[in-house]
Length: 338
Image (tube, rainbow, N blue to C red; front, side, top):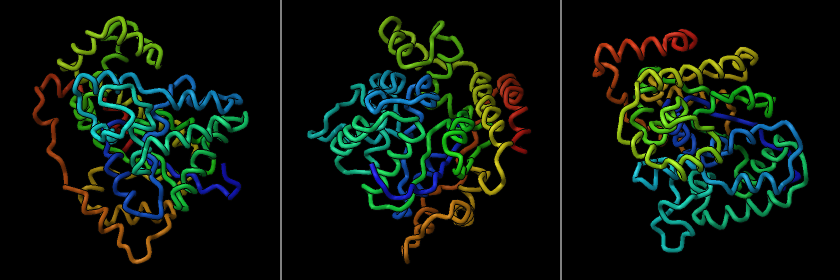
């Protein structure tokens, strides 16, 4: 796709509902940096980090897939603010409720005002790519997107990506990582209120039966037992399931964290980002060695996106729920020094 030297790999990683979307929106204020939202989290897990050579056609087929959980939730009216595809535009290819390719739903509309056209161009290039390993395919996509956007640097951020930090470290050995984390109790409660995670965590824990959490398995769930999705959207599953999910993500990421030198990994607290955004963003920019917008004051514009600390949810729990959640989060909270 491009013969120029690849830009350094940069990632924002975190659990679900940790503030990584806000941080990505802030970093996108730097007009010299391409922020790629959610490229990896929508690729089918069994394929996403396979260790074999892959044809361009195989990868293109993966990039054509929707995320069935997202489709199931949105067609039922669940709100997913991360999805910015212009469904209301009469010239758009898809309408709300359609199975939109994941990258087209979230990432591409943030890069182009004509997302359908840019997506088609990307798929055409990926499909024509030679057979090679997935790290080379992914690098080629990032190189092409940065060239296409006229920006010299990129940052990818996928929700829940601390969970697959070991794979990112292996696929991108030169990468630097910013890990944004939030109090586990608040993250878990936010997950339960956020429609896609409200359902997906319940499904992962068997509350819709024995489901393989893959594209095929989720499509089968919708086809054969779609009423389970309605039920899970309408009910509150036990809060400890969300605390456990948060903890597992932190634990999985920490295994890779321990292998990285300090110059490649930066911990950022969500609570500090929203209270002292200028200071924290300056530190992140320095750590990632981001190119600066000459005279643009992007950090000032980015800092203005913070609305301060959100209302805490945990104090409103019953004592029983609060105890079960605290127990589920305890080990990972210690890992984070919280």
